[in-house]
Length: 273
Length: 292
Image (tube, rainbow over all chains, first blue to last red; front, side, top):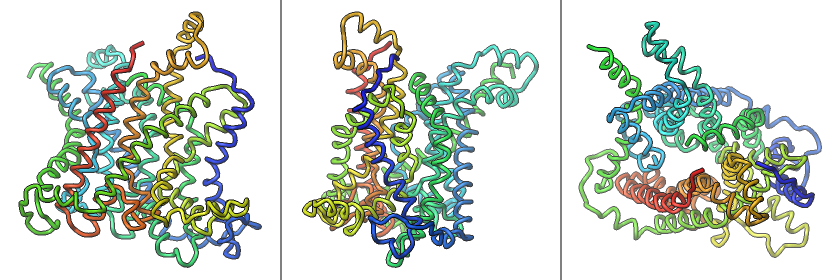
């Protein structure tokens, strides 16, 4: 589209707004470096680099939570990609009634909220002896992301030429091998879009671990921050800010380096959808 | 078995894992929730059938009533205020200027920050002796300084305002993607016909942007009705029940008090509301979408 050149006033207004949007992030960073003497003097800037809060929080417990968060995030994204890419591909290719209905059933999950299912899910997980396991989180993340991922993969499949499959078929290639060695690599843009739009929600999730996990060894980062917040509120919030910075940093870095692709993915998604 | 049948069954095998996980951990519990919503059930013992009593109790519970009212306020605010703001932001961000990369990044950055971390920062900024009030006093606006999250009148409006910190950037980026998908020749054609300025926006940009409007409105409605983390962490629903949301009330009845049947009835109402409101909204916006 023909882009209008912004006037200087617009640009200055936007710059002020952008500073207001960034301010809480800067404040978060600042608070994690303020020594106890000035911690509760909100208008004071940190006068030296005080690293004690980080030293206090960098312990086994934090690494364990980080490890759990990485595990459930990768597990959830990975399992979703594994099952939903196959389903999305096949549901876009085959036109028989059974496949059309299945596609419809899965896509209704985009509109029906999973919130209503939470309490029966809790009982189901108790029943399956999966309560307080990271497996439960991976399964729940997968189930709730299947509708979007299936939809996305089926939209991208339309741009993969069928001739490839026919050629592979003549070469005597089995369906599964054909899919994983030829089709799946071609669907990489869909995989990228899916990861970049969903990694944040999984990493930052607080509600699911709050309900389905209870032992500290299994805890992910977000509920751990909350536990710190309510435990040490009366003494000093410094460590809470330090952990918050550490927990947010990987995503901020990821975002800064991939934002171009994310916008592109959204454009593609909106055109194909 | 001939080839096409073999392929048909192989096709089913491709779909089966996703379908199984989806049905077991998504549809089954939703269907169960309808059953349990008519039961008195503490989660342990045998559920006892009590008809629609759970739904009747919902109307007598101040937390549920306040929660419902607050959730509807969030949705109304999302549609009337948040949406136009996000659209304006997107239109401006779509222009050319020197500091574009910086401005875009800072508008969207809050979205990748978790609600937990956001609550840590905002909880501190908004304390009675916190940054915002001190700043207000510093510039002589003592009268406005307020215990933002601890006063019935301001607690929930403050939470709605805080939700905008992430919602604006989130919605704006979807609008931005929609704006960039509009082919430039549409504008050239319209300009040749003599359209300019606001007319260009009203008759070209806006109709072509309608699919994005549908998506953003849908996400706004669903997101608004699901609001949980901010009130849970910042006010715990208080003071009194003034900042409860429907979802928070459901959470408390289930996981704090063990009233599972009752909480499930609440979540059935919430689910129904989300489906009804978003269907109406999609009907209205979808009808206005135009094909290129």
